[in-house]
Amino acid sequence: MSSANKLPETEVKPDSKGAIFTLPAKKEGSTAKSGERDGKLVSRLRKSGLDPQKLLDLALPNTTAKSVTKLRHRLMLVGFFLFVALPSAAFSVYMFLWASDQYHSTTAFAVRSSNPVAATEILGMVMGGGGSESTTSNSYIVADYIQSQAILEDLPEDIDLEAIFNRESSDFVFSMGSDLPIEDRLNYWNDMVDVSFDATSSVIYIEVRSFRPEDSVKIAEAVLERSEILVNNLSESNRRQTLRYAEEAVARAEARLKAIRKQMLAYRQETQEVDPEANAQIAAEMISGLDKERASREAEKATLMGYLDENSPRIRMLDQQIASLEGEIASVRKRLGTGGSATGETGDRRNNLSLRLADYSELTVEEEFAQQLYVTSLASLERARQEADNKSLYLATFIQPTISEDAQYPGRLLYSLAFFLVSAGLWSVVVLLYYNVRDRT
Image (tube, rainbow, N blue to C red; front, top):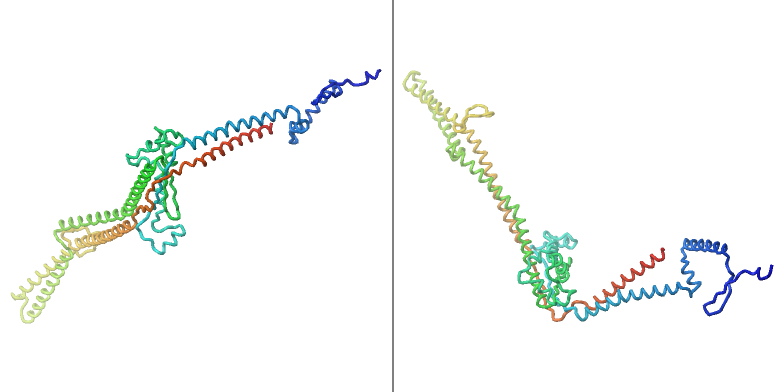
């Protein structure tokens, strides 16, 4: 065999600088084995966490992968320009050239109570317990009211929010717009009216912004007026709540006293006597007088029996007088009572003084108790009124709505910087997500 047949076939390839070098020609079998080995090598590299493309880029820096990488970077720069730099520049131009000036008006007030705070309650207020009637909860109610839909409905008719907040129609970003639903109007209201509450001093600060200074002052005055009306309503509601139970107690006691007096009147009309106790006393005096007179007649009879006969006219007359007195005594005693057991007594109460006296005593006790309860209820009502008057709420305004001479809003530089940072942040998130997906695939 010749030496030419022994040499393997070679393949001529130019290098990047134009030089020519030769590589041994691969046979088909060796090529298949080499491809299988390469596939196994790539899979092993990926399982170990290495990127074959990156290794190839490091080994062969002049390959087409580098050109793909440069294209990807160019696309990222173009995306940064289109979605970050250009919108940020446009927004900055709008903020500094088209955005309208906004003027603010500030007011501050506090909800106070006329109830003096005792010295023993000061420590409780410092520790957070508050006094007998803390105004903190009412202050929170006022602050929430200013930020609620209710104040939009309660504003006076001469305040047209749509006209006030649309005076600069060219400023479409900060203008309110027209024909908005109440929810969007409330969101815009809360953006233009800032309410802050200092829990330490219980002071509510309000800052109103609009496109004209006088409009801001007008809105702040309206908010202050509605807040004062709300505080007065809260005070009146608190007063009614405090007096309600006392007034109900007085009404019940008065009704009970009237009912007892009606029963007393019906009893007197039925028995035809004003006071059975006085009648019983008169009956007792009558019985006592008749007993004395009968005893006197019996004593006289005993004296006359010493020298007169029983059939003598004088003795018979005394016997008749004694019998008459005993009959009267029995009649009077029968009026006082039957003389039997009181258990299950069902006699005629109009002719039985004892039964009438028992009924009258019960009515008298009920009347006295109802009258005392009524007097006590009246005293409680008077104390409740005094406490309600002492707990009345009022609005203490110590900063009247101010008028602005120079526009402090909007913060043009701050808004522009915030828009750029947000856009750059979103662009960075998209780029990081792309690299994350690329590395995992």
